[in-house]
Length: 220
Length: 220
Image 1 (cartoon, rainbow over the protein chains, first blue to last red):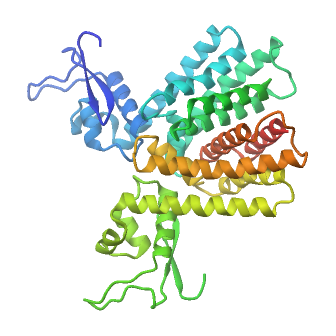
Image 2 (cartoon, helix red, strand yellow):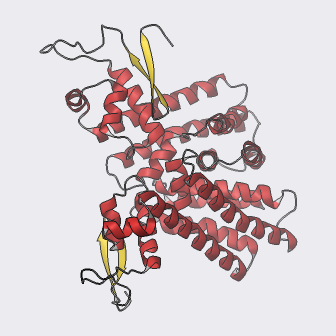
């Protein structure tokens, strides 16, 4: 835990609040309320990721973000628009991390295997929370006009990283060119989503590993 | 619409109520209330399948089932136990339908391809509702002590049908014996779950078809 921060647990989710006085909202009445929007979004994202949209109450959000009800409404509109901003933060940061990992990977297919294996880490948790994109797609489906474009954008971002990895794998001779990187990226997206759901279903680690081995065999 | 039944739409979900007087609850006060538990469970299942657990209110359930609050509590305990019964109805009936389809299929791999293609039908809906098992696993994860055993049981039921299909496909020479039917069934379960999530993400039909083709190529 960093200095100047404190943590608490909300329904089993660890939440970190910043108590640096320069960015906390002052207690004096009548003074403008200030907060760190980055930390607020991070806390809201962690909460929505763990609990989903419907199961997260306004009260949960106020407790996790440290905002008053009026500050939340003034700054983020409402629960759904805060959710949209939190989900955008999720796929922006996660796709950026993936691009960096691909750049640093020893080989493009090593990166792909690393993505598949990352599901095992989540599966070790008492309650795996999966990938927020998979959770959001399954909770909302295509029914919400504001969330649907975000699901499509998130999907595109992750698929682009997979496509780049398969293009590089074919360029360096690690992978045959019998399938297009676009088709392989679609298949990889399907495999990752399926594995995430299997981890959340409580499928055993050795069984998840057997699926990962089969996916890798099929890719090569 | 069958005679003696009427339909209405609740949040876009068509719900059918039985108005056969022999199984409706009488309006007379003091008389024992009767209802068709099978129809109640069917209506509850359709609703939970479309909306998920958290997004379904008690009021939605009363409207969909035609029960009074006290009848629901007397007969099913509470919202969660009604959900558990409805989910059990889902995987009991769906896995039975799959076994029947496998028996009637022209070939075991034809049955497997048919399962994958069934996702396309759902994807054509304005708001695909996916597979209830995938939805429940993603909403609950492994955190609920009553729902988790049901998720495991449902997973086992569906995987058993896939295993049986792959065993038959190997026995009739349609499929090589390089992979065990158990591993192939795990992979198929992963592919189906991933495809369901892709359909709910609004992925285009031709892209879903490309994933299905790749899965089938990999199986052979």
